Amino acid sequence: MMNFNRREFCKTLGLGTAGLLLNLPFSLSTCQRKSRKDLAKDNELTIKVIGLGGLGTRCLDQMIQMGLKDIEFTVMNADKFSLVQSLCPSKIHLGESSTKGNGCGMNPELGYAYTLNSQETITTILRGSDIVFIVAGMGGGTGTGGAPVVARIARDLGAVPIGVVTMPFSFEGKWRLRNAQEGLQKLKEASDLIIMVPNDFVINFFPPQVLLIDVLNKSIDIISSSVKNLLDFFLASASGCLYFSDVKNLFSRLGLAYAGIGSDPEKSILRAVQTATDYPLLKDVPLSRARKVICILRVSSQERLANVQYASEIVVKKFPRDTDFIFHVSVDKSDRTEAVLFISGFAWEQSVS
Ligand SMILES: Nc1nc2c(ncn2[C@@H]2O[C@H](COP(=O)(O)OP(=O)(O)OP(=O)(O)O)[C@@H](O)[C@H]2O)c(=O)[nH]1
Ligand SMILES: [Mg+2]
Image 1 (cartoon, rainbow, N blue to C red):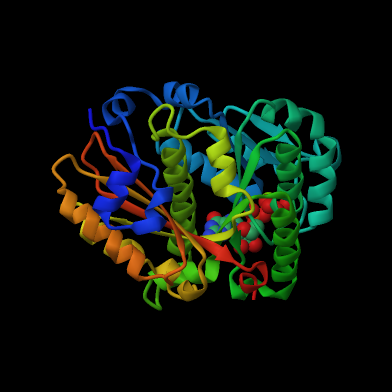
Image 2 (image 1 turned 180 degrees about the horizontal axis):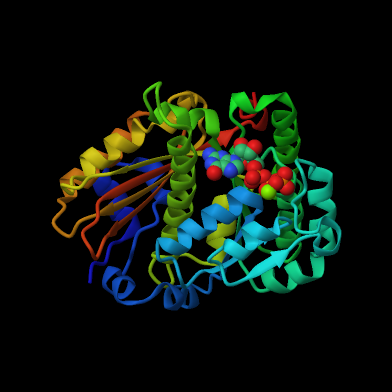
């Protein structure tokens, strides 16, 4: 069992006052033996993940395939075919009596109305949750219209709503972009944090002759990994380390965030951090205007303290001096080495241009 004094460890990492927000795994061994469900119980954090529309449904299927089984997932869609195909056991058919199962045809007003019609069912599903992830592609009808409704229900129940959304590719045209911007604005009003995955930024991962299918799939990967890492952040904080009041303090009105993810097969946290800071999704993000950074480091049991310290310095140096940092460091039981950055604090209007 590794026990750290939060303040001393911050000093060791050389993080100064920024490190006072450091959230450390105070009892790693406990955390490694328990299942996600047990940890959630210990922390008294109940987390639910909702996937809306076509993209939301695909992302939840991917997360289920990643083995995140103890988390409660629900897909909601007006498109019956997509629902039937989904691996998710909990499904809500939005607008069942009105759409004949055909989706909302890029009309967010229908998405809004159908989701509102299912308000009671959604309330029942979300009751008792502390954090609700809402995953949707902005730009169509179901996800764009429905996501703000789900976020509002979650907030009214006292939970922290976190949106995870894509913005349309430029080639999808102005209609979808306008829908997406309006939907994002409404989602923002009802959520504490929105993790943005602009589809145009996803193109940065690939050479010019990339196949469309690869780009589509990559963003599903990014969303699924981002949610998974945030779930780990909440759940792997050993018992007593992170309470709902902490979550509320950390995430309340955080705004938009972009994610950078890096791993290293040879288990070097330094290379993982370098990959995360150079992540193609961050290429067009104005890091100098970030106000808050959440950095999740998952290191192998053989990783040296000096490397963790250096890795944190690499991150800190990328941002302005007055940025707030939250570092979460844990030793991975399967020796996976991963670094994830959530960069936030941007003004809303900077995001959607
Ligand atoms: N990267 C990526 N983006 C997707 C994918 N599917 C949809 N999107 C994006 O998400 C937006 C909304 O699409 P859907 O999720 O299919 O729409 P919906 O919410 O089901 O809405 P309707 O079908 O109109 O009722 C699109 O404009 C795309 O930008 C995907 O597989 N990968
Ligand atoms: Mg659809």
